[in-house]
Each structure stands twice: as structure tokens, then as C-alpha cells.
Amino acid sequence: MIRKFQLLIISLISLTAFSQTSSFYKKSDTLNKKRRNSIIITESVMAGGALIALNQLWYKDYPRSSFHFKNDNNDWKQMDKIGHFMTSYYVGKVGMEALDWAGVSKKNQLIYGATYGFAFLTAVEVLDGFSEEWGASPGDILANAAGPGLLIGQELLWQEQRITLKYSFHQTEFAKQRPNTLGENYLQQALKDYNGQTYWLSANIWSFNKESSFPKWLNIALGYGAEGMLYGNTNNTNPIPQEPYRQFYLSLDVDLTKIKTNSEFLKSIFSVVNFIKIPAPTLEINTKSGIKFHYLYF
Image 1 (tube, rainbow, N blue to C red):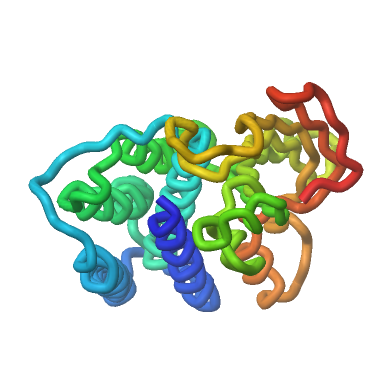
Image 2: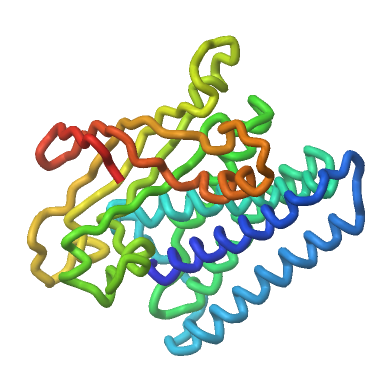
């Protein structure tokens, strides 16, 4: 699961960078076949190359098997599933925006662009399904579908993304206890240590009432996290220092894409990093000790 989460984050960053490169060119008002074809070729090469590399660099070192499923829905307090949810959402969003740049119709943007994340991540599940070590995860496949579901649903309902998925991270003491699994440094821990990761649904307040005086950039965010996890689940023979527990958060956030600026460079930067939750005062409710308040939560 850790290896898969790393792949998801790398894919997200790569596709987001591609989308932002495209944003420097004026959007086509009608179908531009050259642009559309270049997008199809680029995405196909990126996805195919990633799958081939993963198969050669990772799966070949583990025994193969006939295709099978594995139920890992109870592992990591479902944090890995939310990682799939978020990544399939953003990969689909980038795919949709790239086709929009090429002048592709809205219908085809949703059919072929928004579902790109689901197609790619589910292909990874197929590789897992032929590995004796893992197995295809029904929960992962469902999460892969939920991301595009949120993306497409909002486009059909509002023709815009009023609610976005965001990510934040802080270092924890648990990584020091299992550095090989949870990471040896900050970057590795940001990818591997589920204890320090928080996933957010961030809703833009102004978008729901565009006649209001709310700042256009102000969001309210609901977050989910978990701590106390040294292993994927508690059904193992290894001692754990404490029982893992869930965390729920309420906080403020910023939609960077709604900050006014005349700089195209800043607009691109804001769009790329907008998946990161801005640190802010936060109310936490957890299943261990109840209610906590953070003056500034990362």
C-alpha cells in the first residue's frame, strides 16, 4: 500500500505539471485535433511507461499468481483508500482540463478526461491482482471510482468544482519506530506515514452564495486522519504502543485559485499547489480523548 501511495502522488504531480504547462497557451474555442491528439499520446505514454516501469522494477521481485482479490479494507484506518480517492479525483481533473484546453466538448471531457484517474489506478490494481504478495483490492477500486464521481457530479450539478479534496501533513513520533515502513526523512514520511497525513473536503463558501460578501477565497474544510498506526492492521503478533484511533477536523482554508492576481506565473503556481490544505486554527474530535483545539494545524 505504501508503494502504491507513492505512485499515486508521483502521478498526480506529473499530470498537474503537464496541465499547467498547457495553461500557458490560450484555450481553443473549437476542437483542436492537434492538441487533442498530443494530449492522448502524452497521457498514453505516461500511463503506459509508469505501468511498465512498475511491473519491471517492483512486481518482478515478487512471486506471481493467478488473478485474485484481497480484502484490505480494514488496514490503516482506511487512510490509503482516501489517498486513492484524492488522487483519482485530481488525475481526472487534470485530464478534463487538458481536454478543455484542446477545445473538446464538455461531454467528452467528462467521459474521457475525468475518468483518466480511475482507468490508470485500476490498471495498477490489475497488476496487484496477479501478485501473490498482494491481490486486487475491491476497496481501492471503489475509491478509484469515487474520485471521478465527485469530480463529474459537481460538473453536472454546478458546472464548477465547489468542493475540492486537499492534503496536509505533520511529522509524528511513529515514523521513528518503523522508519523502513513509515519513512526516514520528511519527504518519505509525507508519502508513507499515514499517522501524519490528513485529508480534507474543502468547500468554497462564496461559490454557494455568489451574492454574499464572503471573500471569494475563503473555504471551510472537514478533515479526516488517524494515529497510533505502526502496522496496517491490529491483527498481527507485533506489539503496538497504543490502540490506533480516528480523528475528525473542522477548519478554515483558502482556495488559492480565487486569489486575484495579474501574474500568469502566480496563477499557475496557485493552481498547482491548491491541493495542499493551508494551516489554520482547527477543531479536532477524536475517538481517543474527545475534543482538542489547535491554534494552527498542519
